[in-house]
Length: 258
Ligand SMILES: Nc1ncnc2c1ncn2[C@@H]1O[C@H](COP(=O)(O)OP(=O)(O)OP(=O)(O)O)[C@@H](O)[C@H]1O
Ligand SMILES: [Mg+2]
Image (cartoon, rainbow, N blue to C red; front, top):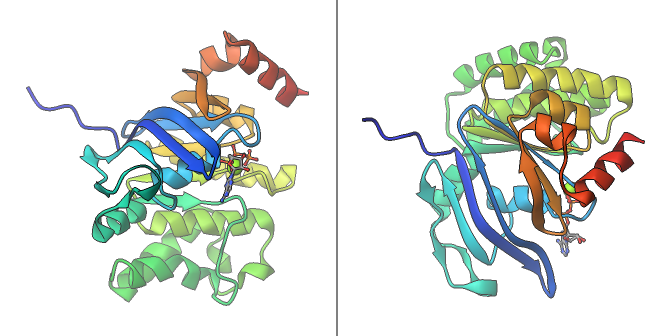
């Protein structure tokens, strides 16, 4: 018998505080290869914090994070806990590419340069190869004609698609999205939603924080509802959206549907 493939990302009983404020109170989520896991919940419930802890942009104080079965190595405990191995951090972070609400493109670089930058400078890949990949990714997200433009010359939807191409250029094992459509007008949101749906259909592993319940319902294999730093309910989208059992989730869904 072959060993089952470990999840791309496996978070176990994660706890995180900012000073006295306990933001994550023991959260476990798992993203198997090829699955889309959506995180939903009210503002302040800890969704962004969980993503940032997952790719080691933030320290967490307790619990484990496993990347493809490999546990993050820590030194110290509690508030003094930090990742022990800088190379491991870089490897994990580059394999869990993040797409942010505010795009975070580099304003002084063209769109093509934005997409090429990290594979060339962080991964040390061949510039010529990366350029070919970057151009085809920009084609894929529908902005192949914007290679030489600067971010400020693009619409919000185009900038976010450039940010997705930039994340894909790292050839990551998973993509982490933090509200990729929240900063956009409704018609621009749809351009980005279309790209995310294509990525889901391709079988990319993704963790998606979103306020767009229709998107979460359409693309997710699994939906997690966070409430005040704890998982209040989780399950397949049909169950979470169609037959929520917790009162808090019912209230959250009726408030977002309004
Ligand atoms: N750097 C920080 N320092 C102190 N507190 C923080 C920090 N970042 C987040 N918090 C607090 O942690 C809690 C969770 O924040 P987080 O950003 O994870 O929520 P969220 O679920 O992503 O909310 P939203 O839907 O508004 O984006 C909030 O109470 C927030 O004020
Ligand atoms: Mg957030």
